[in-house]
Image 1 (tube, helix red, strand yellow):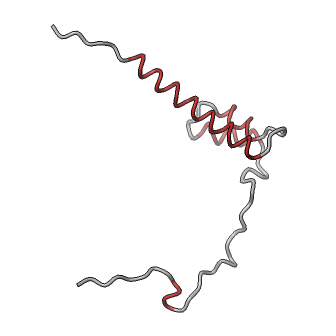
Image 2 (cartoon, rainbow, N blue to C red):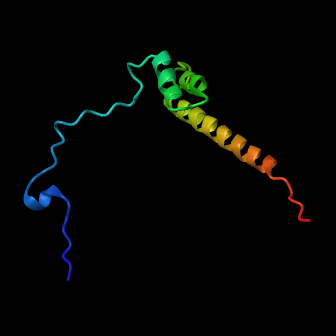
Image 3 (cartoon, rainbow, N blue to C red):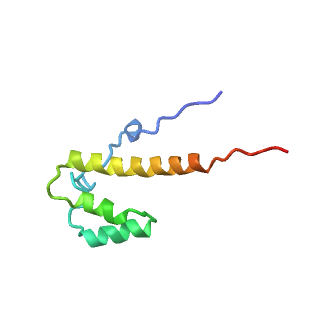
Length: 95
């Protein structure tokens, strides 16, 4: 027979130490300039690094609009890849 163990520290009377954790922020790009963000995106291989950084640093948009714009950019890239793959499918003739 196997015994199941709980992973929670409260089993042993300990509590999670949340006081030493870093506080969450609403804007993870706070304190980062646009050029540094573009370099980061380029280093990760993002072909649309400039567009992505421009969307993030656009002052006119609120956070929801920025999130939608980033998701739309991702979806357009995915759609283009699928479109390319569909165009590459050529009928193969068997002789």
